[in-house]
Length: 504
Image (cartoon, rainbow, N blue to C red; front, side, top):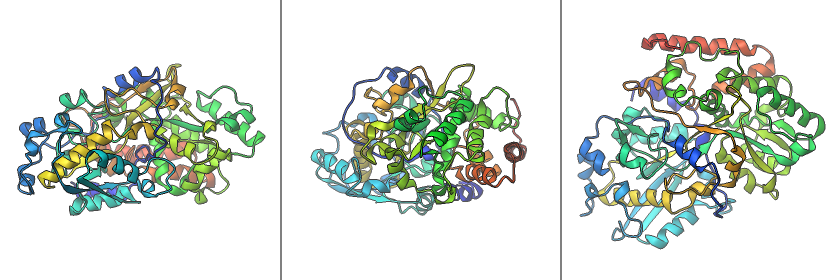
């Protein structure tokens, strides 16, 4: 891993769409959007993984030879990969303890308003009583997990942090080839490199806007906004006719600001190739295209809301945990966060029925799109013992196929055969899901390099740059165009440093 990239990633917060929470384990009927999400998943965003894995290892989902030397039993991991695991049978003879490193510290609490880690593990142990799962939560996961990964002291399973795709095989056991994995999971390409899959998404998310239905009704809003202009007008109605905060920024939490990056690709362009293929080759990508689309018009929504006093009184004192109950009680009108947040807001008070989720208010040629993609992915330590690698593999597949985790989180199911979508996706009727396609061959790490050199960290923990929009809009010391010009300059300099060909 390049030192410069590692330092830059250490200073970045985690991607907001990667911090999910659990709701209840109830089931719902399949929604009409299942096929649409399946189609989007087929073109899932690729961050590829390392050339060090051999094709033989890839087919079998095995660890490296070095890892094999750490075997603590006669279990042959070479005969096991994700697709070969038969839940309820594979690994039943193993007695071991595995460690899971997670960003979901909230799920460690006994009073967590949903399904917590203890409940999931108890259910897992009904099938595998001899596999003990210890969970360690890290609050500042984006930074601290990288340090743990580098140090090697992280356990057997972790949520893969923001490292270069070419580094995956240095740390994680392969699950199998992309071709094999796409037949059993959605978003199989998200954590792959050189056609080898190193991470299984914990759940999938769509990108939209949380809102309180009762607040909208009180403000006289009977039609959901579909353009930035309509959205700002609705925020003004909320301020005028209710006591609710029109748009809650969650500035103080930091990582929540990175959520805005998730809307600049599929949502704002309708183009699955934009984020990973076109953006690195685009000149001045933060300029106004003049048609109400692209990154400029996504970030301008935030700037205008701040400049017109449509946010909280003091953005520096926002409270992430507190905001959940606030929107449930009708004290907040809207929040821009991924679908992962929906179940948390529902569970935070007595009025879950008032929590709504709508597509981001932007149109491309008269049509609305919604970016869809994976959450944090489970990676298995390639240097763990054979027992622990196999036990970890069984646990990951159980979480994906049997636990109900995706549904409980209000997420898109990862099991390709599971079409049981939460109710919230019914609100996206007529909206087309877009899932980012892979980078161009030979450019798997280009966007990461540009992010590092420009320090913009687009869709990779870029919370500080989005926070700066709020700061400048509030202080009135920079116009929105001046902010975008400075970002364009940083991106251009990074492109020049890497000798990037400008194509768009």
